[in-house]
Structure formats: structure tokens, C-alpha cells
Amino acid sequence: MIRFENVHKTYKTGTDALRGVTFAIRDGEFVFVIGKSGSGKSTLMKCITREEKPTEGMVIIDKFCISKMSRALVPTLRRQIGIIYQDFRLIESKTVEENIAFAGEIVGIPKKKLHQMVDIVLSAVGLRDKANSMPMELSGGEQQRVAIARAMLNNPKMIVADEPTGNLDPETSESIMALLEEINRQGTTVIVCTHDSNLVDRMKKRVIEVDDGLIVRDEFGSGYTAEDKTALPKSMIDEFVPEVMTLSELQASSEPLPKFPTEEKKKALPAFPSEEDETEDVKEKKAEDKVEEKKTEAPAEEKKIEKKEEKIEEKIEEKLPEFPSEENKEPLITVVDDKKPEKKEDKKADRKAEKKAEKKEKKKVEEDFEDPDIPSDSKEEGK
Image (cartoon, rainbow, N blue to C red; front, side, top):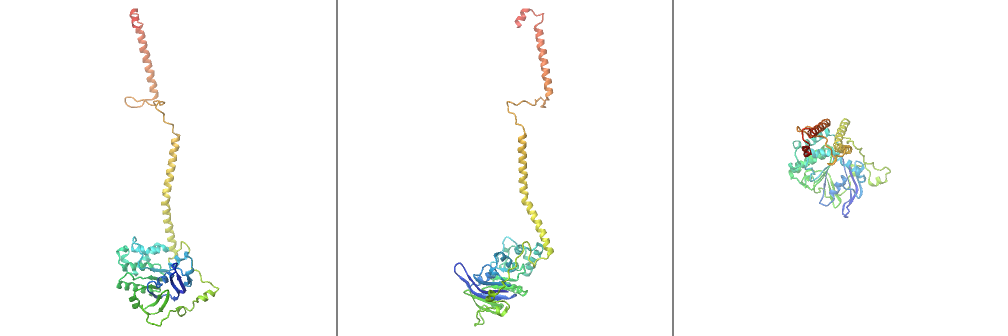
């Protein structure tokens, strides 16, 4: 149940969008919210989804006062509300299936369960064969059907549609409204903000008309224009929800309104899925997290290895002896004709042999010089 009790909304510019709005919507109703541009109907819708917070009064959904709830709980509230926009708001870089699945990924539905649910909602809106198509390949009506399928994915308690047929031709608009009516028959509360008088007149649902921030008409089975000219703006609380207390009774009551239920982190919504599926999903998520961690750790480990290699190279360079200069350098090897290095022992032997040869030659010269057959004059000349 949705209940507005004396709701005021004044913007910072000083504009009074809502001025003491009071009404109630029962579970499972189909309601049209109509009015001229600037009448306050869009602000009324935003108060239901908590996009706007009332300046005064209370907005209550299922006995929880959402107008006073903390911002941290707003995502939890919106998971129970399917929102359909006039401009579709599809991600152009994702396929139809991926656009719908994205809403489930945010909520935390396991992958196996999510694939089945996407298939179900696509079948419900008649777009199963368009699952792999891109949004730009679809017509306007098909894109709006994708938006409806996305809103249905979480099996919400209510669907709020802001001008869902504003950009569509009359025939496509009728098919979209027929689809919303079918969703309503399954027990989902549907609230549609629209300017399309033909659809409102044809469907004959409850109509709430807003004008200058006030509810000027609230009729069942009505059209875009008032059938009962004497219909006065009045609260539907006493007629349809007598067990709900009035604002004065709530203020006087010692028992405060219950707080909106919090949601534990890393836990799926109660409606999805079974405990076995949850544990499998947790395992899959952990495995994926480990893979991601390894990917991030790999570059860090490579850097460590590079640093270690640099340190080792520095130590090796410190231990190596300095390379001798050209002046102090002694030949370590000698090159022979066959270009093979000589050993030190062979070198010494060669030197000894050379010395012996020099001695022998010297001795021979001396002997020849001192030969007795050579006359002394010639010896002196030889000197």
C-alpha cells in the first residue's frame, strides 16, 4: 500500500510543487496520474521512488515511512519498485539481454538464475528473438518493451511508469498499455503518469488528477475528463484502508513507525535464489576474485623479479676485478701462425732454446776470431 499524508514539496527556487496532498493506493491497483505540465504530478511520482524528499508530511509504503528513511536504504527500496522511463534509458553498447541482466547484476542475482529470469521476462514482452540485438536496431515500441522487461526482472511489488507511451505511435501505445495491464493482473501495483487522454478514456481505471500541487479529482473507472462533475478531492484512506492511522494519531502514538528493513551485504534478496544457488554463486564469485587478484599481482611480482636481477648484477660487478689499462697490461696469451694460444711452459722452453742458440753462435764467432791460422795483422783489422 502507498499512502500520502499531507505531503508538501517546496523546491529551493520557492516553487510549491505539492501543497498538502493526501491519498492512498491499495496493493494490486492500476492508477493513472494525470495533469497539466507543471501541475506537480512528476514530483508526486518522484516522492514514491524517493527521488525527491517531501518538505512536510509523510510518504508511507507498506507501513514504512520512506520520507524519513536514510539515503543508505534508498537502493533497498528501489529494488522493490520497477521504474519505466519515457526515454527508455537503455545502454547502447550492450545487447538487449545484457541491458536487462545489468539490473539483476546490481541486485546480486546469481548468474545461472539470472540467465533464466532474463529469458522469462523477454518471453513475457515478446522479444525473445531480439535477445542479441543492440538497442539501436529496435523500434521505439520494442525499446520500451525492453525497458518494461528490465523493470519486471526483480519481480517488484509495484511498477511506476512516467510517460511510457510519450514517444510512441497510438497502435504501439495500446500494446504497451495492454502489457502493463497484464502485469497488473498478476498482482503488481501499476502507477502510470500520462498525457494520453485516449488511453485513459479507453481503459477506465482509477484516475488521480493533480492541478497546481493539489489533488482535484480521485475517481474509479473514470476517463481523462471528469464524469462526475461534483467529485471533490478527498483522501481514499478511510474508505479503503480503515486500519491505517491518521497523521494526528501517528504523532500521538507512543509506538513509532517500523524502520525500513536493512539488507546485509553480500546477501541476495529473499526472493532470489535458493540457499544452494547462493553458495554456488559465492564460490564462483570467490574464484573470479582470485583470478582478478592474480592478474593484479602478476605485474607487481614481475617488478620484484626485475629488482632482484638488478641487485644480483650490481653485486657481480662489484666482485669482478678492474680491467687492466693498456700500459699495465701484460699479454696473457701469444698467437702463433695457426692462431692457437701458446702455453706459458712452451714459452719458457722457447726462450731457453733461443738463449742456447745465441750462446752457440757467439761462441762460434769467438772461436773463428781466435783461429791461429789467421795472421795477427788481419786480426787487428778484424777488430
